[in-house]
Image 1 (cartoon, helix red, strand yellow):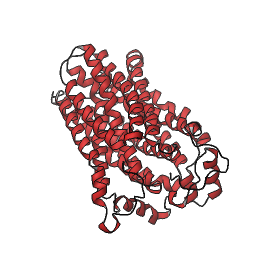
Image 2 (tube, one colour):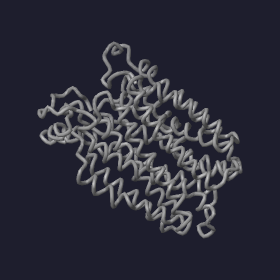
Image 3 (cartoon, rainbow, N blue to C red):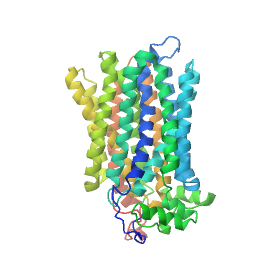
Length: 450
């Protein structure tokens, strides 16, 4: 959100404390997102060992891709839909949809219905992430968007750790279905809180002509009152204009690079989240240790979000993301080696520090590339197109597992890290090259270089 509007009439300072309720509610929503995404990988070894389900490694990889294909559709549709209907109602519907999908998975008796449940859950999950990112970036204090994004995404990994804990405790004792029944909790816990307590976006309110409400929300949280430049365009023409604006001078070359970086990052995130336990099991580690690696890598992810966010606010998210992608590639190669168990735990934790926040800093870079009025659409497409990588990651892991080539997965993930570093690292150059000569001397509307 632009900070150029009139100052708030209340005189309240715009700080993390003033917007803490919004950050906390978005944190809760993304916690359940991380739980739902990681729960499949956490219980997959138990599902593969269940003869009544009839799940094969190849089918498991395909189902992981169905999930992320649903997320792709949800992300692409929601980024534009939310500017029309509002952030809060679409976010609540997203939570209800992926909770319902988890219930379908818990009831499924065969791979087909289970995959349908995961696809349905993916529709809701895909819509949730760009919405929460957009809300946090809009409400974040000035020049603290990268740190706010990192703080938000710690919840994804806290949810992943919770899912892994369920896989380690609930699945062996009661069966894998009970883990998916736990995925219905968001509809009971998060949805009512979001509906009652989450404010609407001031920019969206202003775009709908509800100026007094927009200014009241901004004043309540100590924000600058929204200006017309912050408001997303309305109507069908406005939706089309928002998409076309992603290819205007200055960002037209950066946009596909952000998409490519997001593709690589989400291939890594969902490929590793889905297949790390099984890949480590194939490398000779025991079942309990293999599932524990998922817990450790998510713990590293939480630390990485806080580290990356602080560094990115000072040096820029592009530099941090590119370096983190390179370190992820190195970590993936090390995981492919048969190291002592203690050393492996250290490498897994360090890889988690780099892997997940490399992707999140792509979102922080997009926040600097696109102005406030285009942010929801830009983030929706960055996450949506990136979901093709989330489709490819589980499919790739499943294909390699089905052909007994699990070890090649580490090499494939390392190559994805290298490509991601090249893509995100080229964004500043692409922005300079994408400007028309006649406007090259004009200031960027989206702010400083990422």
